[in-house]
Structures are given as structure tokens and as C-alpha cells.
Length: 294
Figure 1: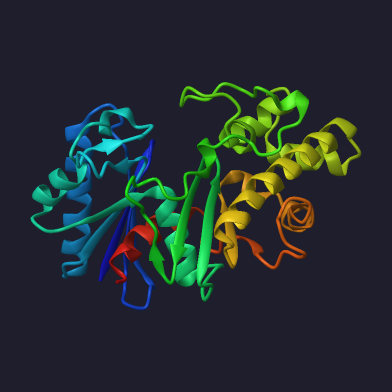
Figure 2: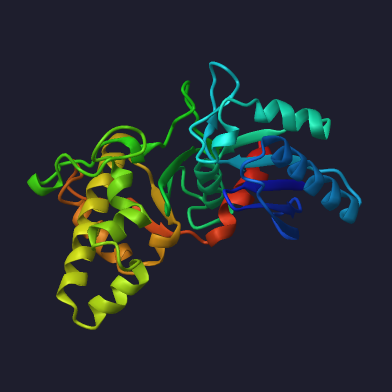
């Protein structure tokens, strides 16, 4: 049995998967966002409760915001800020009395979709969460690519490629730079570009009703997404790119963005597939469980 845990900003979710990946149990509790010790205790309690209910002990994988620094062994880059600078992996291992595996939530998303999701069977996968941020993860040959800095896939904090004059210097990003991909392609970035009043679903409704301003916003977004993904294709050349998060529910991007990518990819054609996540909001927690797949 594999246990996967998604440590989110508002909730902690756990799933238990059987060896074939079938769901056995799912539980959620609120995240005690401002209390590190309470977060560790809540995760340990969820694991014990599920194992008691099922009568067996499982491997434990955890998807987190941020990542563990290879230099210090401490958490970094987490938007749940009480985690930063803390030895989360060590503390959870001690609380549960066993080895755990921990990865960034976007990495878990990518692993889930590469294992038994929309990108199953693809040798090289780039997974993207277009939500509050623009997290990314890379899976090669069924295994996560991490890298010596534990930031593989962090495309969102690179500058938007081939910027237009009206895109410079770009919106300020919390990382301290301007014009990061995340400031344009996240859900908040899309809303800000339209004036901050509507989300992606409403933009689509307005565009389909003939609203020229909404249509223009979506066209800008699709071109920016094509530019950003083209740089990934130019460097990594993945067989499949999987989109998740709220903005991934805009159906039209799966037709328009691949067509636009051809303008920016350094090739005579683009055969990389662009697909929507199969497991939706469950991909992150399933991917955490699959951290023990090999």
C-alpha cells in the first residue's frame, strides 16, 4: 500500500493506493497554516488513522509547496512560510518512525500524470500547474528529475520569452524580479491582464458571447503560453506536456497553443502533445504516493 499526502495551503489530503493504483481511502483536514508543529502532528495523525482503518502499514510520500534544499536539508521556497527553514522531512520521518519521500507538489503532479495519467507511456513529460502559481515538474523514463539545486521544472521564474514592448518590464513577482512567466500565466496573472475582474471560465463565456475585449485577453494568454512552452520544447523536447490547475480548464488552449508554438519552436514541426491532466485535482496527492514507485 502506498500513502500519498498533499500538504496544501488550506488543506492536507491523504490517499491510500493499492499496488495497481486503485484508491482505497481519501481523507482531508484543514492545514494549521501558521503552526509548524501542528502541521507535522496533523500529517502523522492522518497516516496513523488511515493505517489503522485499513489494517496495514504503507509507504509515505508527501507533496509540499517549495522543496528541500540539498545544501541544508531544510525547506525553501514554500508559500506556507512556516515550513521554510525547517527540517520537514526529518521531523515527519521521526514522527512516523520510518523513511518518507518528499517532493514539490508540481513534481508530484507531473509524476502522477506520467505514471497512470494523461501522459502515461510518454518517455519525457513536462507537467505544469496553471493555478495560483505556475509550478512545473519533469519526469524522464518514469522518474522525477530533481537536479543539484532541487529546482528542475521551475520554469515560472524565468522571464516571459520574446516579450513585446508592452510586456516590458512586466509585473512585479514575489521572487523579486519583474516579468516572470508566473506573473503572466498564473490564474491571478490572467485576471490582472483583463483588469482583475473575471476568471478564466468567465472570460471564455464572454468571448463566446462576442465580447471583443475578453477574446483579446484570451488570445494574449494563449500566445504567451505558447512562447513559454516553446522554450521548454526547445530545451527539453518532451513527448508530452500536461496542464493542470484552474486555468487548464480553458478548453480552447489545447487547440490554439500547439498551433502557436510552431512560431517559436526551433523545428520544422512540433509533435509534442499538449493534454489536460487525467486526474485533475487528485494528481498531486496521487503523485506523492507514486514517489515510492521505484
